[in-house]
Amino acid sequence: VQLQASGGGLVQAGGSLRLSCTASGLTLPNYVVGWFRQALGKEREFVTAIRRNAFHTDYADSVKGRFFISRDNAKNAVNLQMNSLNPEDTAVYYCAAAIPGYGDNYYLRPGNYDHWGQGTQVTVSS
Image (cartoon, rainbow, N blue to C red; front, top):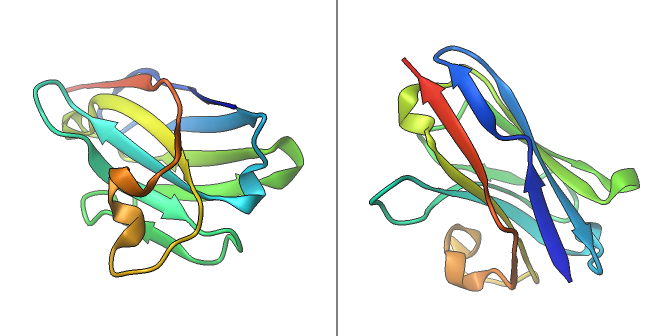
C-alpha cells in the first residue's frame, strides 16, 4: 500500500499549484482522503478532506475559498487545487487515507488516518 503526493514546487505569492495524491494497493474511492501540511518547526495541521461520495468536503478556515479538493476516481487520485497562495502556505503537504469513522471533527485529526503519503514541498515566495 502506497500513497504518493506530487505537484509541489516553488511559486510566487498569488500563484496556484495543483497537488495530486495517487495510490497503489489502495482504492481511494473507498476511503476518506485528507490533506495535511507541516511547516518547519510547526505541528502537522489539517487542510482539507473529501468524503467517499465526494460531495462532502471539509476545509480549514485558513484555506477556505482558495483551496479545492476533488476526486478523480478513474485515476484513483485525489487532487488539491491551491489558488491565491501566500507565504503562510509554505509547508510539506501530505495526503492521507482514512477508513470512514464517526465523531466530531473526526477527519481533522491526523491520528484517524490509516495510510500516509511521503509529502511534497510547497514553497511560496513573497
